[in-house]
Image: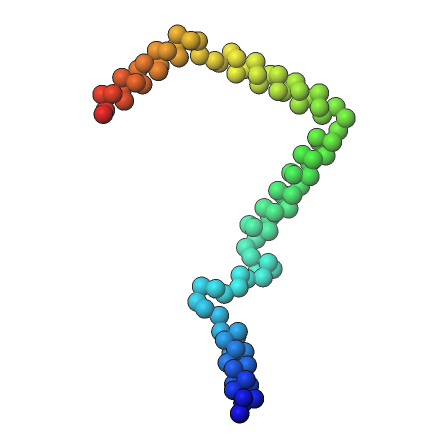
Length: 100
């Protein structure tokens, strides 16, 4: 008697495993995806590989340091003066107080 119940439960479990709830279907195989996605992946891979190779060159740290210094100089040149910063902050505070 117990053996029959176990077999029935096993059969029910097998049937449940075959049924997939709606929205939980498997994604299509990669071979059936669109051609745009297939074209984008190799291009991205080659760009990434080129970047890795470029950074592995012996002269790369010098270029990176020069670029960092240039960016720092640009930030310093575009920095607001203390007077400009105070005027901007005061105008913003007045705007917020008027809105409240």
